[in-house]
Length: 578
Ligand code: ADP
Image 1 (cartoon, rainbow, N blue to C red):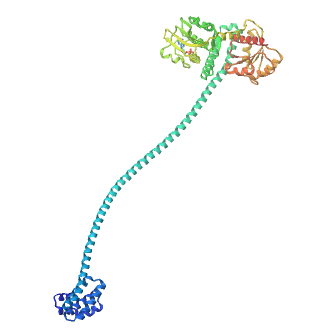
Image 2: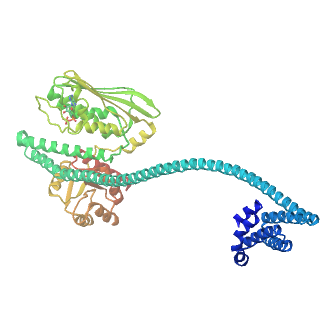
Image 3: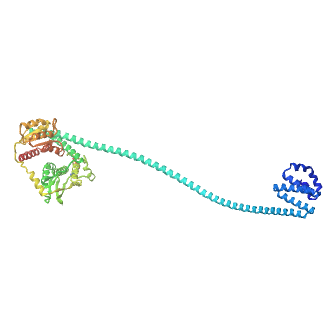
């Protein structure tokens, strides 16, 4: 059909038609719409030029119809062109005009369609540009997002790092807490162990002092016997008075007794069981008594012993005269022990007065061997004795430690000045109360006539055979008569049978002790004065003794004169009361 169309374009219609003849029928019958339309259009051209006007118009109509039905608009234009040419050929201008108009309007439509197409293309382009811009924008936003994404990634990483660091910190904190808990636990345990150890130590220390206390008490009773019996032997066998063996027996027993007493005293001071007493005393009297009792040492060592007492010191002072005497006695006997062919002075000076308290400075000064600087602190320790070459004295090494502790009880301290081979001075200051009224009262109370020599009848209640002997001897020597019983029940029987002026009652006895015996005696309504005899410290048993109904206490071993004094006192008191 293309070749035929080409021949028709150069007006060689027959030549062209040759190509159509063979396919004409087949196409018109079986061809598709486009082929049918083209065939009809070509056959229209051919028949137009072979004067077959009607047939030609028939073909144009068919072709036009197919083109219109199928909107083959560009073919419709060529169909209209051929139709215009056809009518012009057959000199039908009116009809040619009709188809020319159709052709023009179609052209117009097609042309505007083109334009429309172009506009549409431009619009699409604009749209495209817009899309591009939008795409750019999106791209930019995207980039921005990408950037912020990067930033947030960094933040996330940072966050993770911080989290890890925090976790590590938490871990170390936890470990620390665990460690501390462990340390705390160990500390608590150590604390507990320490507490236990402390309690044990305290218990041990208490046991120790209890042990010391018991042992020394137990030792004092037999020692009392040894000293007492030695005295009896010396008394009964005057010819043995010069026996060196008996002398050293007495000396050893006395030494042992003083050692035991010292240990007991130190133990008591350490236990804080010593309470200072308030007694009235005359200082000159007390110091003179001490001087007299150590005079024999002074004589032995050829020492001059003197006392210098300030006249400003009141006549009567109130305080613990026994402890004061103990201090001065210790220092003076030391001074005499370590001084040969020299001088020892006991001085007392009123230093100051605060209210009723008179502060008196005591000085015990000697011209003896002195104490080396390096030893001056040591000597106050327990059991310290400085080594000396030509030793001829015996000491326990406890004297100064007792002295310094006793002075501490008086809220004072001991001072020491000493130079080797020049001499030694011990000093201390103690405040004593001075109250005239109080003094007078006390003096009136102790005004006892010791000169009368009554023959008193004494009951001695004592289980220890040796003590029985010793006490009996002392009483008989004092011109008094005595009955001895072994236990409390026997005492009750004796008191029922006989009247006594006074009872000397041992405290520690089998069957029934001294306290209970006294209670039973008092229950019977017997008012006879009862004096307790004990190896214990006075203060320890005082309360119980008084509660049981006893009148006084004598600590064994006692001086015969002291016993005599106490007996006289008590009998006088009970006579006055009766
Ligand atoms: P002791 O029982 O040995 O006398 P002390 O505690 O009383 O024990 O004294 C301790 C030591 O101090 C003595 O051994 C002695 O060496 C020394 N001492 C004490 N007083 C004097 C003194 N007045 N002169 C020289 N030495 C002294």
